[in-house]
Image 1: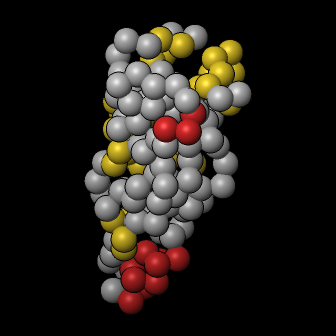
Image 2: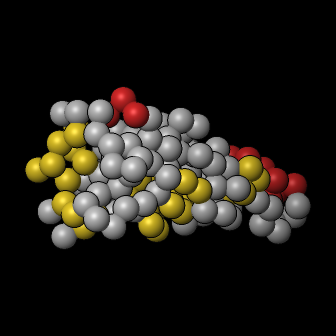
Length: 128
């Protein structure tokens, strides 16, 4: 069993230089001490705040800066590009008719980063 994820949960990207926090808007109508998250809480700059500097060579800004530095990896500011919801989520627990987000879910950035939950923000709501 995993833990349900709520707003303020700690998240990290495999190519990001710094951790971030998941922002969940209270429109899901389910709250503990913070609003509970669903798999569609995946919007950049709304739910997913940048992770400091990006180190992925798939990111065109990083590739250009690295080329300009004669091959020395040059991180650039992170701007996540998310095209799909969190997966797998918890399809048996619905919040506002959307599957709940659990701590084992992952999110893919178009630049190759894997975003994962490092701390779900709550330890008292378990989901299957």
